[in-house]
Image 1 (tube, helix red, strand yellow):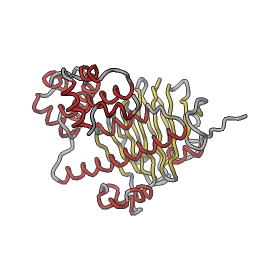
Image 2 (cartoon, rainbow, N blue to C red; image 1 turned 135 degrees about the horizontal axis):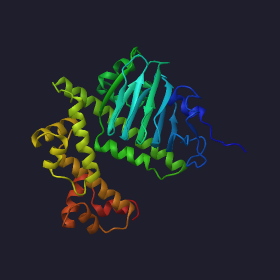
Image 3 (cartoon, rainbow, N blue to C red; image 1 turned 90 degrees about the horizontal axis):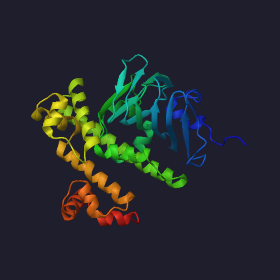
Length: 341
């Protein structure tokens, strides 16, 4: 019997034509899906390690999850299908070039929105050694209007021409991933469900990401209208360096002074740049990371609440319980009981 998983239908909205990525991907023999629900792809062994998963939730709404380590530089060419692409890059970087436009870099911890008119060529360059973890939501404008009809007046203005069918030039926007977005992307990449439950989980998290992205893009426009000045490339890179350091060391974070030295600015400017770019203070950002980590430990391990409290920096479990309840609205004990631990 042949492999029941075929690439062509599920790649169409993402790649533009059925054979677009046949050189780079093959159906993986280990599938967590039923054939009609989703498809896991493996990259060509010479180019990369890892997987991409494609899920057609419904007509005009496709979710692509990637966990790929690129072994050498590679180019992937696609053709636009007049679909909106919300790309959430948790880690790794690449460069995207749309026909007739300047190349744009996709940095880690970034949300990129891209819409190209039908038939426009797109080329993405991946770099050797980069570990890409990402989620891309490909959807037709009609899908967004159908799902978010009651809030259409609050949609990002950048999408207005798209919804009215008047987008003759590529639409591009970007902003930093919020902690909530990063958490949802990570959950999708690490999805342990299979078959029916897997599909439900992907749909729920993808809709969460779509809603968060629409809100984030609207907020960016509001800040710009109030005179908000987008960070220059050098300052954005400084914030990215600091955010990476916090992400990797949140259980024992560097001091503000040390972070400022790493970024090459004084402490006051660092705190201002971070708040401007990320939308919250360094302290609040760290607190979110610690609480998300604590929730993960409660759900996935047998560690006691006292042990988890100590691990995330609380000497007394009562103080941890108060902070956890303030953040999630439930106590650590309730959060653990909800998953049967």
